[in-house]
Length: 184
Image (cartoon, rainbow, N blue to C red; front, side):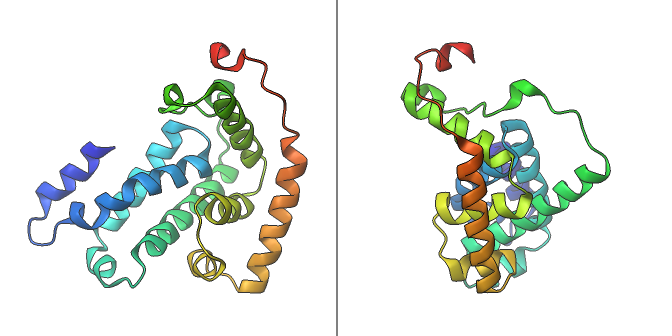
């Protein structure tokens, strides 16, 4: 992931792309991971967004709220990817559910909970998944979120309510059995 950014910084010395994007890459990757549900798809999504953003450096430097603007670009690329998958569905790998790089640093209970949440998020439609992960996990306020997903505030609140209701129904959390870490 960091290699991608360094390639861009070598290509454009006048306005450092890396300087604008580097502080936000970690948050963008986490958001992409929540959208996609696995590390390889999150890497691909983030790479697509960074390639698109490289050509929009002037717009990036003029953005009032750069994190919200970057998340909006990520959201739109995610929705485009979901639409293209509907047209040409791929075979999902059952072993790809939440393979996190930092799971070694997590408590087993937290790791088990995270796996269940990611699996529950994958059962939401793309808009619901984005709204819940940006607001409840990413911490964006409702006005920022309305700007990111380009939706009226009332509609956004309805989507958030429905998404939370569906997620609660989907989750049906299972107690930690001590074996979750060893089975992965």
